[in-house]
Image 1 (cartoon, one colour):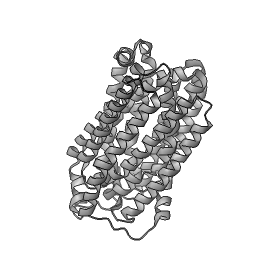
Image 2 (image 1 turned 135 degrees about the horizontal axis):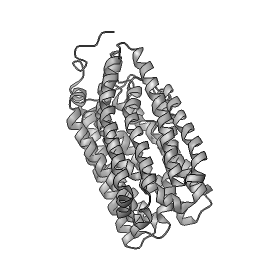
Image 3 (image 1 turned 90 degrees about the vertical axis):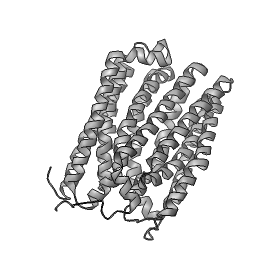
Image 4 (image 1 turned 135 degrees about the vertical axis):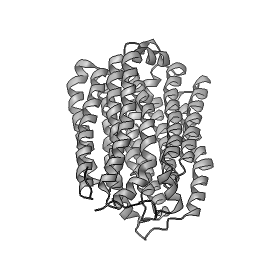
Length: 427
């Protein structure tokens, strides 16, 4: 099929802004994610220096336990709404499904906490963090409105507000001598306030300007549309957390407390990948809908080169100054962690490259095949961790992440080539 002369010409003004304002919107996305990522790192630093011994391990375990249910509950509705250029579903349908799925995930997290063979204070941390993440999933759907209307500056500000508020709340609570579960509860309160005072009012005004009325499809159809993506990102979350499960099981809670803060350094780098990819979602959707497979691949290549280059820069920093850098943040116990950090940085680089590929698969509505990508990642990571963690410790867990991401990325690239070549155009 021939490439359209101007694929944005028929877009509404708001969506045309989202497509054409990629650089400016990317800058806002990057700024917000950098601030938020730095603040998440700041939370771990605050817990390490202000909390009780063992608090960092408890918080790390709570993160690993609550992430998969909440990620699945998202059903990636934000991405579906941002790329729903045909207005298949009404906003109210998205909102109802997000509320029901979040409530179910919260119950699952509470059930996991109740099943833990752990002190009551540790169980309370898991429950408090689940409440915070439930609020975060509600805000996530509002961010889909910002993304669809090309207002990523609102997305960046929201992330900055939540990030700064969360690290401030936890640091203040711990400095006052409050237990960790109350500090995490304070963070949940800050996130709720940001949702109510910032995210919802701005999203409501944007929806009022260019309402998406939907075509009448109901919540069941939307759940079926989101289920493949929800399952995909559940597998992705399990893959990301699987090394932590192996570390906790093989090496104990203290070792997990050392491993997780290093992994969060890579999270800051992820801000760059999402900053490049997220603003391009409407354009990818438009190109895919027009059958412009070559255009989709070209855009993905440009994003992947940028994110991959940034990832390689991170690998170099980790190799040259990884141990001292981490030790300066957390303390001398992290001084000899350079090999683990380098392996995590390599896994992060592969993840950065994979982000635009997966976004393009979503825009092309190649959803089911994404299950194969993350099953490959999960399987590769599980096999590698089982082989290497007992002998190599935390470095083996990091290498397991590398193996998993390599398997997932290779599968995703093959899937994208197949999906876009059926839509016309040559590489």
